[in-house]
Image (cartoon, rainbow, N blue to C red; front, side, top):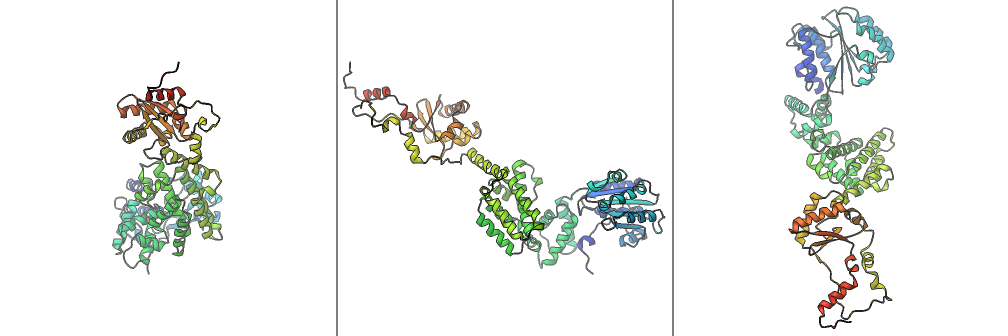
Length: 534
């Protein structure tokens, strides 16, 4: 009869246990030095080795020929316990034996000495499932057990165990197993079972296991049963009904571009292939979490889940702000939580994608904050273009009032030359100035200076004066500040190699401020033959 891989390759000694060195070494030292406790409590997530270590400990305390704290697995006691035939080592499921009557029967049987081995061992799995009355019935015998009795309690929810039980046990915390350790174990099992497992597929299975060795080995067993050749990442996704990192990255890219049509098309194709809807949303939520980690703690790449590669994450990072990622994770978690009571999961998932792609359709506070943060980032980068005033209206507003006034009594000048205007700065000078300002100024002022034609600020150089022409009132609010103008003047002087003074003018303001005296002086300089009037 076929035996599941996680049972076939369950560790039989402390040295075989993967990723729990702190626990196994402590237990081995206690066995070697004969300093065993009467009650142990093993805590940790599923598949980390709690029950396995409990069985190994039961064999080790009864082994006739222990080897450096490990059971020999050869003596009659070890073989009897390993096969489950030993009547003195009992494994009890607290989920189905959680009443006070069950604990009373256990307590009455525990006082008898063992008949086959040296110590009677009770392994109570999922001990947090016991009722409060059952816990109270267990207190006395755990506190003062007979010399031949050993209790080993295991639980995945430590907070449900009463403090009175915790204080009577030695507690050992089993941590999640590292991805690298799981990959090594999967490769070992694949080698022994002659399974052609690619390294990328092993790493992907290890990430899916989320620190649980049993989950990883079970997934490998499932993939090996479905595959006819090499097990690669694509085969793993196909067998387990997952979208895969490439499709997940494409879907997240469509969400970042607010392309609802493309997002729904990708989702529909995955749904038609039989992908699990909850798994797809969970992968999206995991990618959003990874992007948030990169944005807030970019140096710590070890915190990433690995659903998408770091290269794909960096490409997606520029499409989302931190507020948007927080909004997305909240929407995805709410949608996944409602799947248990949903009448139509597909509709719920599609509505979730639409909420992700269309934040402007949402009026909640989190969506509004996400939209505001995106606008702030565009303003800081200089990519924000104000369209509040059309160019035609701006041109009309820039026209001096006296030019449109038909009743203006200003005396006409003969052959009046056009007013003197400042010349635009040299392109190389402006580019060099913008580069210096990028390091000298801070957002949002730095976003107002750009080397392109769409720059909110333009410069005109006249001798030792640089006149900054501002596009609109918002630009003026950010730039027309003493500290900003002082920084611009220092950078302009450094680029020009001489002292430059900086002033601010709105479009057309220079022409409007030209006085009549300046115009007369200019006319007289160009026509010296005219007799001066007395």
